[in-house]
Image (cartoon, rainbow, N blue to C red; front, side, top):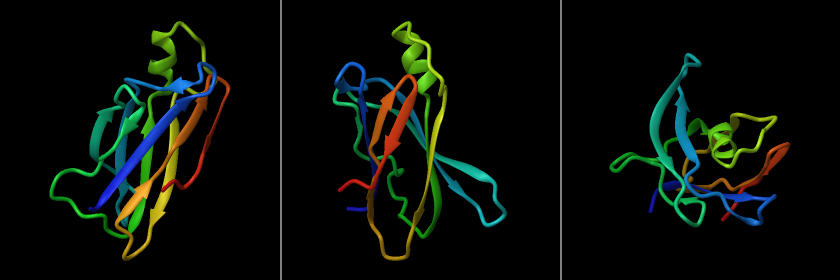
Length: 114
C-alpha cells in the first residue's frame, strides 16, 4: 500500500495528540508548495493515510505542516512553535513513509518511523 502517515505524541501529557490539524504538501519543480491533503489526527494521534485516494507516492520533496498552535490553544497552553513543518524527501521506489512527531509546547522531535 502506498501511503504517507504520521503519529503525534504529546510529551507533556504523555498521550497521543488527538484532533491536531495536519496538512500534506508537495513541492513543485519551481519551488511552490501544493496542498495534497489535510486531516486531523484520530484519538490515537494518528493519520494513517494522508495521501489522497488514487495518488501515488512519487519522488520529490514533501512536507507535513502541523497546526500545533491550535492544538495547544484548545488546551489553554502557550507554545513557542505555533506551526511545525517537517520537510522530507521521497526517493524513487519508496512506497510508504511514516513521519512521527514528538511534541511539547517548547520543542519537538521527528524521525523516520516504520
